[in-house]
Image (tube, rainbow, N blue to C red; front, side, top):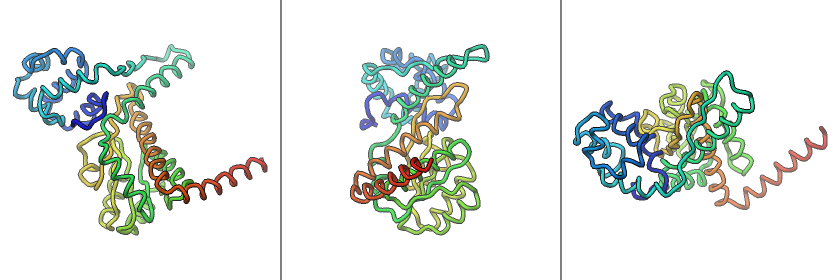
Length: 286
């Protein structure tokens, strides 16, 4: 946990919270809602606020990935000097379109600011390594994450990678079954439980491909299946929770594409020249 970047502690807690027992979840929720107060508390204070025992409070800290309550306090104190994420603005049916838009953009800014918090740097570096050496990269996602796979495949293709994102469930299965040990399957699911995405990822794993899971939770069927896991520790998006995960996922995948592209500069530059010719040619015709 010590290699997590400053400002990431709450994002790590959010990502791990759903896997905790109910009594431990109450402890985590107290930390999330009263993080600045927890810095000055004892473990007994935390337990009392959560309505549980001191032993449970310590176990909750450990199951969240910390060595114990004292390390959690130290990391919260470290993060206290960082700018806090803005609270999600409230909006409703009576608000003007511009007020709704302003609230959505403000909340999106907070989501992206916290999106990197739960990403393990070592896993990020390893994911770049496998993408750089991959013969072929297949992105699979469904539901609210579907457009993320399409956007990622386009960006990787435009930078010289052999990449695709089959949009239909059967196509995903067929493509993933035909992968080899030289290939990479990037499976994207905020919850990590989307059955269609999991079936495709399982097919890729059975074919010998490296499976990279991109998700918002640290414990799920996808994280159990994947060879590499990249967790985007996003805050809830209030009334539009479905968009919080995909926003951070897309930012993370763009980061992977850029980092991998920097490792293959000649190929990326060559293909980008072709892409630019296509774009300018279409512009002239229109």
